[in-house]
Image 1: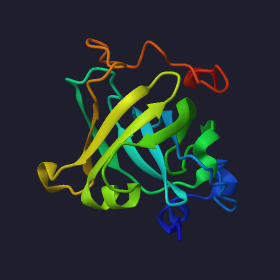
Image 2: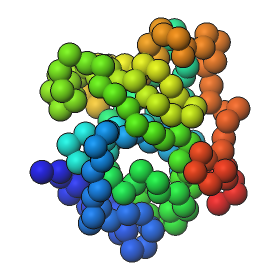
Image 3: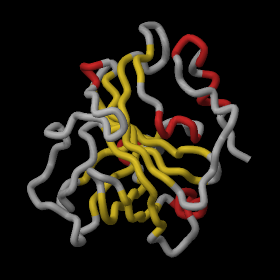
Image 4: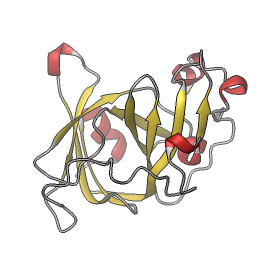
Length: 185
């Protein structure tokens, strides 16, 4: 059973406008979303649908299409599935205040030897994303970097969709759903 108690304890969804998670809609094929979140600092939230929730990481520098880039991904609280298409402005005074857009989204396939839940528990996930901006294999590996057990690394797999030298995501600031950038909200 999904546990969204941490998510709910941090926000007043009536005030923030964020989904409450009251009606999860699981799909036949798991989905991912990457949200560009301009809060106290600009970062990207990488979320994978696992066991009825969006398992979430904050990626300060954003995802990279270059396999030589190892991007820090800090595990955050699980989010409800209806966060897949959330875009909006979270008001000042609320947790995560700032603007959120759906930078990329789509289905994904598990490339790991274990199911997604076991891979998450073991700290090793490997997935193939089918998004407009992010495609191909990506690996998430849990680290003990600086003693913080929330730290993972997000790395592009060296496959046909890899793009050497494409280190940043800032050249593509628009939402794949609305076409808006954070500044437009």
